[in-house]
Image (tube, rainbow, N blue to C red):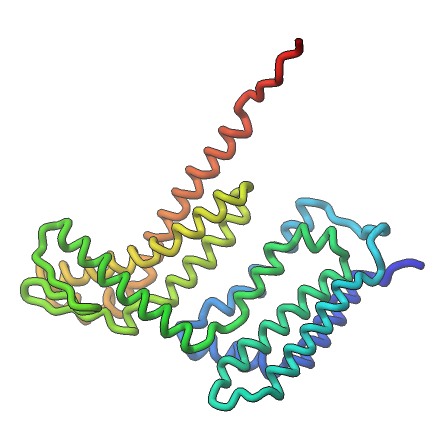
Length: 298
């Protein structure tokens, strides 16, 4: 028996998901538009679609007749997604609506992955596992977890700024997230944690690593390096504003660089990521071009 056309079948299953998860999707996009902490969500579906389309063109995938028409694990994944969605919708989540939304969106992503596996089979699923798992960035992080991340970014940014001040021989004292330098007291407030640009940097690094690198450990390394780099660029921002405010003009403390200058330091961090990617990519090419010694025959 011939398989059902994969593309139309997948489109139908995606349409069903929009009907079943319309309210959670609407709430997720409303959250992303109303909070800096979730802005990255708007990028996930377009980036995932671009990665799948690019991979399809590069590999030249076609329908594979040898793959099963109904792959049992995929059907099971769809069933699990429905169970999780039902639990999130009718479970006891009083006062924890953000957690319920997180669980509902996990169920939606599982439905999408299961739909893809059902329509295209396990071989294609393995080939596109990165963009499909990348969809998990669509899941809103619960508010309590975000608060922990923000607190960590505040502390890390204060420490990074303290190191920079000390490196340039500026007397500095730190008490938690409060920095004191001659003529100025700086507080790394929640709004200064730079969580939006940090998440954007991490998401961007993951995509660039997947596209430009081949070896898994190099991809993991550059993603791990993006985390301290996101803290360092925020520390650099605090240091720069503090130095300009005390050495050049106090208006820098409340000016555009303070309120809208995050993009400048994001781009600095992104340039550092690109340079690291270039170095790792060259090391991959050098390893690939190295002559392979064959064992000597007796």
